[in-house]
Length: 217
Image (cartoon, rainbow, N blue to C red; front, side):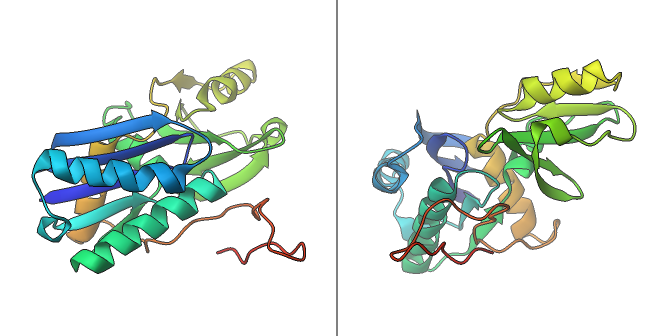
């Protein structure tokens, strides 16, 4: 399949063209602001480098959270726009799903994907869902765990201090080929559907005119 994978959920913008499981073009930049301006250029340049028109894609894959309110919204809007214009499907992928794709061998450990949030909080994604909590309120897991994500080091150290059997992985941020792989399985029906809509675990800090917060999912 020819897949355009887009991500700006966690401190990095990336656009990647994956063809039958292999990366044929890709750009990435570590950035916390300005995703809406940078991502379209990356997507355009990826398509150019791969020698593809958007209409030749089979699907667009996009990370939908958890992570940055601004980054998620910009990325999902771009993915939806490209897919609509090209007449191809758009498939949502969580950050934890994409990170888990890079860690196929965990020896039976449960994977915790820990993402930095704000004000000393983290997003903790497991197979059971996504939590937003203070780092001091980490729950005690049942059994051995592996920890990934950009807040993995602090989470692993706190769990280890409690005597938890924990393995710190080197997986920190989603990669385009892993986003595409998850999206392809979801598209084929091998995974439960996930709408290409932002996942906002916390109310966003952004405010509309008049001081009201945007409606969140």
